[in-house]
Length: 399
Image 1 (cartoon, rainbow, N blue to C red):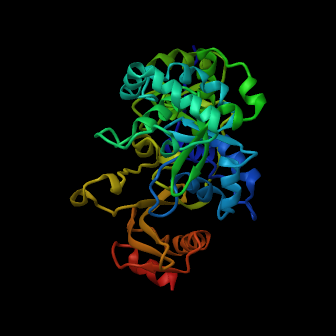
Image 2 (tube, helix red, strand yellow; image 1 turned 90 degrees about the horizontal axis):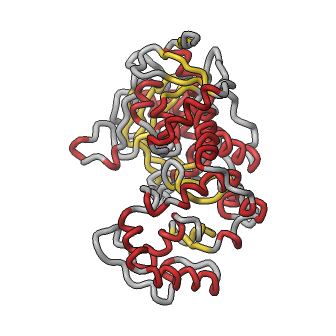
């Protein structure tokens, strides 16, 4: 067996950033085709209700493409000619339609996995008639939120405060018998039958066997990461340890090339078609829910960047702020920026700005990116607080 190829830490970093879409210039006028192409490249956009700055699923496209029209994103996500569906990928995600057959195996075993929790499974086992009644009501009445159900019940208990109707709908969603038609209000899921939401050719495509589907998902993960350990590859789609043989099969097929990476404890795998750029010229704010940061251990290995999201950290343990976005400048994280969009006053607040390297000077580049973000969010002004070792220079650059 040939000796694994070896990569320097710097080469691995640039390969990883290129795979994530940071090696090409932003388009002059990003439109729907750019957004859907990015979704196919990354495999999914993670959904989260946090809205301190912008909805989590909208940020990765801005980070890589720049200011795009929100209507293009919403049409791809929930429009009549949608390009994506909602399901469990890394977490709750918007996923390209082509992946629906690849996730059929997950839907079929949802009651036995984390994607339908033990609580959901118990509820469904205890009340199968109720589950059937909820499904029939959606079939008869059309797209419904849990609050629209005739006998949905009231939110109660410690388990996320869900009503019985919400539990039933989430179980049906996890098993693929319902999907999300659209979102209502701030962030309420509205469910419908897949055949009334998704294209017929997607629903009629024969689902591959689980091993074939897992290989396909791992290919998407490998292409999106460029170079990755086994744990990285499995974590991208939250695949269980029983998927490990699929990685060996992808090595045998030539899709993955075994490599060793300087400073990495574990063996790694290089995507066979990975781009090896000589430099990365990115200048981008990265959301805490961006796939570049999904796995904190990988972020530390790949970017030499230790990150802990402040909003899930007790106040007394926060070091950089509440909603901190790393600023990628070139091929390194140059700063941490604590941001908040105040939509009432139309101000983008920069609560704190900290340098990663005290000798770095990213203030002008960061100010430019903040102005771009401010305009995209429909805000009028940037307010830079004097907290952090980059704050004074950033304040001057923004004025």
